[in-house]
Amino acid sequence: MQNTVQSDSFGPLTHMRVVLVRTTLTRNIGSTARAMKTMGIEDLVLVAPRERPDAEAFALASGADDVLERARIVDTLPEAIGDCVSAFALSAREREWGPQRLSVREAAQAAIERTAQGPVALVFGNEASGLSNDELLTCQTHVRIDTDPAYGSLNVAQAVQIVVYEMRQAAGMSSPQAPAERAATVDDLEGLYAALEQAAARSGFLDPSQPGKLEARWRRMFSRVRLEREEVNILRGLLRALQKPRNSDHSL
Image (cartoon, rainbow, N blue to C red; front, top):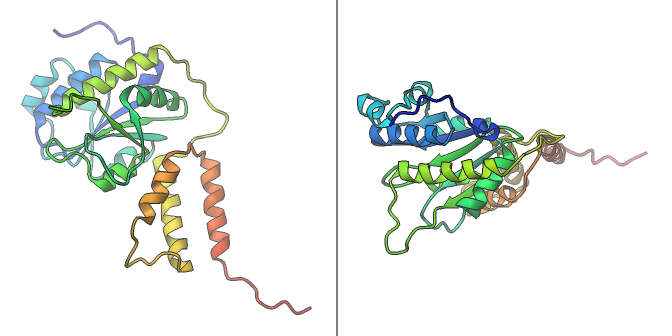
């Protein structure tokens, strides 16, 4: 049934964004739009979908046509979440290296709190393979839906429905206050990671031909810290200063 009543979205939900990465079936895009709209979340971004939303997608959206019509299509995940202060990656697979792990309920509370500082992304992977390791590491939190161990196969739209429901529940119990300082965005963090890699390579601490798990380790470390933009700027300034050649002439 279509709902024609004006949305009563909680304020925090207007700062939530659902990101679908490399979606194969347009029907899942439409079903996702419907799941989002029922919970008052209407910002949808599609990363390199196999096909753009078509008639089947709009049919499965079942009245959430406006969400599909406003959906943005970008080529890469960083483009989709670069302006976000936090990105939560949904993945059922265990990873040896990855960002901090939270349950869906814990993630919902944390995500709603973060909306006071800016947009927050909920990132869902491809139907068959999910998110790649690099895509997961681009996010700051790894979220896994607790399912029956004997059968945990969720359709992507079903996963979206569970997560956005928890977001709405958390929004109803929270009153986030805007912080005094601006939170670092994903773009800010990516700039810091690039500066770290450059400094590590120039100093000889990192061999670019054999990077190992160093980048994954510092991404994991910073994913546990809520950095402010000014703090990122301080760290990048320090890295630049450390790379400047020093004057070795100490003569008077």
